[in-house]
Length: 155
Image (cartoon, rainbow, N blue to C red):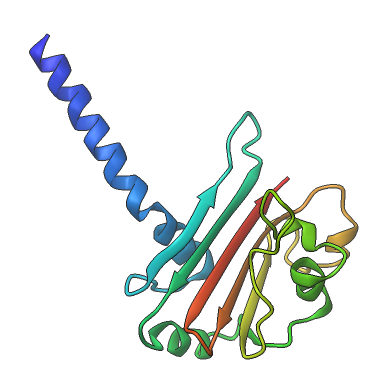
């Protein structure tokens, strides 16, 4: 009985230790950035259920421009203003996708920075906003505040 209790305690401690680093690990993996020097200011993850649908959001603040140096050396990130698809997801007719439960935008309007959009259904981003379901990762970096915004949606 003591052995079983010790195993359960070990599993619980391990699971809780993963919760704290999960946000940064997910962001780092999907955006191909080292975000270890940043601090998670806000985050949530609603993925769950049978199909794993949901949204993940993280706001990571940096005290220096270490993330910016990586972004500027990565040709997948594009300078703002973003293309029409990113603009529509963030601030246009489709802005409801990148918002909280009250419909407020999670990512403020950013003047200076970079964005990156990964369509998990089709690499070409062709007609992405016309589909019945969306599965994408969106990264936006604000160079004025050294803040990285991460949003992932699976519908």
